[in-house]
Amino acid sequence: MTDSEPVIIAVDALGGDDAPEVVLDGLASALAADEQLNVVLCGPADVVEPFAEAHERAIAHPTTQFIAMDEHPAEAVRAKKDSSLVVGCRLVKEGAAQGFFSAGSTGACLAAATLVMGRIKGVKRPCLGQVLPSYGKPTLLLDVGANADCKPEYLVQFAQMGSVYAERILGVDAPSVALLNIGEEETKGSSAALAAHQLLSEKVPRFAGNCEGGDIMNAAFDVVVTDGFTGNVCLKTIEGTAKALFRYVKDALMGSTKSKLGALLVKDSLGALKGELSPDAYGGAPLLGVAGACVVGHGSSNARAICNGILFTAKTVRAKVDAAIAEVVA
Image (cartoon, rainbow, N blue to C red; front, side):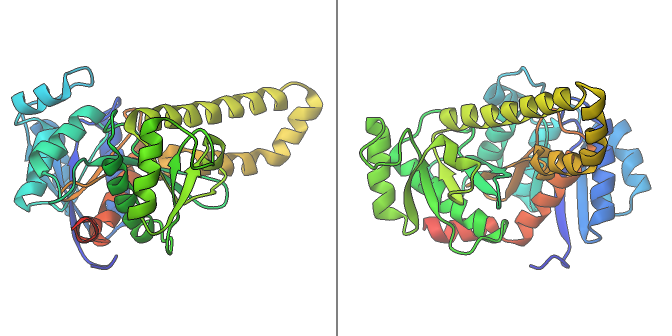
């Protein structure tokens, strides 16, 4: 499947802090950007039907339930089978859509994708990845929250699935893989890290060893694997640090008349840099290992993030990432 071929994506109209307005705005932009994109919009009838009437490549699929951010993920998925989130995943399972995007509850998205869409045969645990804007080239970090506790064999599959994604979506030829650890020497780390290092060395041909935290944003490796607890803390730390640095820069530039004049000269460059470092550039995190494309957006997603998340879901479908993962895992 090429970028010129039609693709159908199910979209959760109620996903996100500012839904449905921000979802509809982002979806409209995505449809304008990709002429072969078709969507099934899941949500309340009074939200999805008017949008579908105004956009010829959008189909309304009314739902009657909603999963809130503070609900228990698995319990909500089982209890609310007509929620926009669960229905979107079911459309993929039934073949009415090829991928699913939501900026709703991450836990509910993980539960619904795993329970409803199902895992690719052979995959022990699906994992959540995040593309980071490392210096010079992007880096894929996974897992970033789907699996708090991981066995070494899970990390091997994360490495395999991440390599497929890096090749097909990020365009990396023969991506290097590393294990996030407290030192680059193979003797460093906990007993779990040591066991994972040994197994990765045996099972992953392009395993390049350990990756320290400082190596991630310097693009020392293409794919970095870790457990979901560590990965999530690492990701939130990176995001928080980036926001703090921009605040410091802003304060410094606004500190005097002289610096304000300098700020005018670098305003466009700093704006472009902020855009490159923003998580909105990719729009969400791919859930790898489920039977179909699934991208989970930030709850605070704006229209740009929603648009990019939907477009990346379509790109994942066209690249046949799930089929490639099935081959590698098998």
